[in-house]
Image 1 (spheres, rainbow, N blue to C red):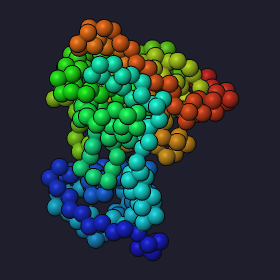
Image 2 (cartoon, one colour):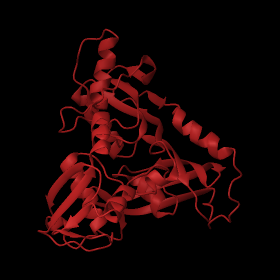
Image 3 (cartoon, helix red, strand yellow):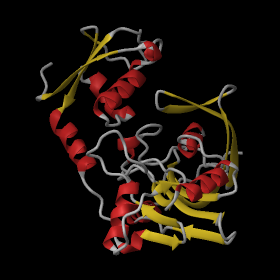
Length: 326
């Protein structure tokens, strides 16, 4: 195709792709084939550069509708693919400061962004469960299995709760499902024109298809998130999110569909074009009752340095005085 050497993928669209936009199918198929997420910006760049062919024909229009059974040929840049694969193979070394809570059968860590919560099918890829096990081993504790009490997206940092036994994990999982756990997140969002109100709530239904979540009028899972502006910044805002439900990408979708996508969100927002180092979403705090002692516990993780830098940079520029949305 007249480009620098790349990695060629020959993919076949399936019934789930039938009738969907080429951009969406391209992102889904590449992630499924390589295990690496492809942002909207990356998918559109591939299409614009003629690096994606449908049945042997270059199609540059992202909105082109795909049919099941078509051949999708993709030419990925080798250096970019190898760099991201190497990043996935890296082992995360959590320091003692990452252990936020160790009480009875419960422990909480400050999960860094980019680390999946649970082990993936890729044996070379690290996970928070494995990193937490190494952290405990480094402190001289005997190896024991660890169970997740809930999950965070790989791109999200912050408080992740684990248990040393299945019974405690099950009890905490039930507490999350019954909405007895209070969750608070920090999000840095893009504000393009109209300023969001000081506080607002999003309620509705979310459905997930092909790894992508979206609001639906029926047939999805009920969701609710409360939002509060903590600080208005230049073309951005620091928002506190309090999700009452825990659906896939709930906070990301609620903010993006409301016109304030999270900075660095490659899946639902501008991603690479907004200058953010990562997805600017951080699970700041959990408040819950210990299932064994009934003691009330609150765990908090400080905002990561890269998010603090982002706030400082945007604080030095005057905020957009656009009118608040009603």
